[in-house]
Length: 95
Image 1 (tube, helix red, strand yellow):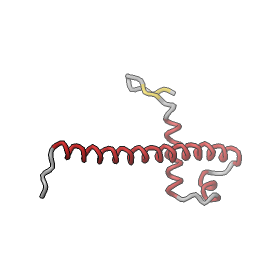
Image 2: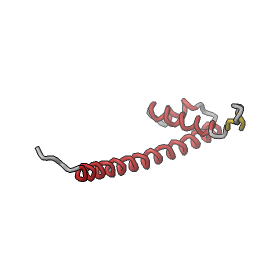
Image 3: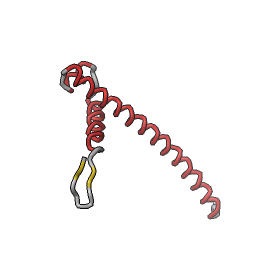
Image 4: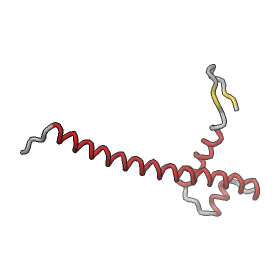
């Protein structure tokens, strides 16, 4: 078995860390793209609901949106609604 110097081990770990950072950056970019697409879908869904008078469930069914995607879009829509609410230092909420 070969003994590696501390410097060699640090270099190996540095390379591993850089590779992990690249993967994390790529994952972050994909996550942002998915979140942006879900926000767009939530906005379009709200517009369709008001324009067509259809229920959300009817729209999802008519477009055959998978249930996991429905949940994702609904959750993003809820985040958009609550993002307009702020909390004061006293714990009160404001719009």
